[in-house]
Picture 1 (cartoon, one colour):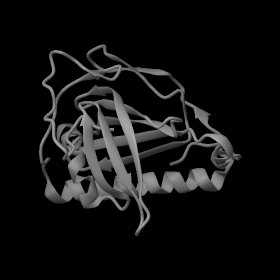
Picture 2 (cartoon, helix red, strand yellow; picture 1 turned 90 degrees about the vertical axis):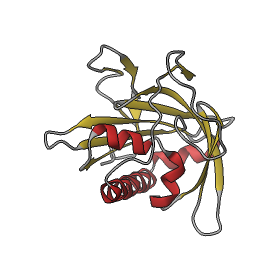
Picture 3 (cartoon, rainbow, N blue to C red; picture 1 turned 30 degrees about the horizontal axis):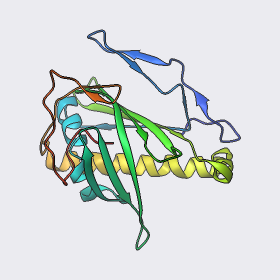
Length: 205
């Protein structure tokens, strides 16, 4: 569901940080326009591993056309409908296997930032939550004050999560994995470097 007030304004999270079971503290979005959750009938490890295989996003996404890895923590995404295309880059700033990842846009004037959390459910599945803060610049900033625009973004995020759910439940297992950790946009030294390839694998934005 989208968390917004009647004017489509951002809504503060109840906490700005989150600690996992190992005592690792993550910086959470203190504000967000959109928050959506879906439960998938696979384990946290399987859901996380598949999510981080971004080369497969075009297989289930209605809007993602291509993902290219630029640097270990930076990727370029091409999205669009029909003949319309938009390319942008994002950076993963925090990542913990089976738990959490956060990203930010790398445009000259960043348009968004977001995070994804993976939590086990009592049934043995996984709850995946995506939160996004929209940050348009100039005249476009007015759009985020509209409940209609924020609601449209929320519906799009929800549809993408449902598509991922159908995809991973259909295949039943992940197609690969990168199990490294990222802090402040840097791959930790005790984590293996992801393969350098024009076909994006994790970590990507």
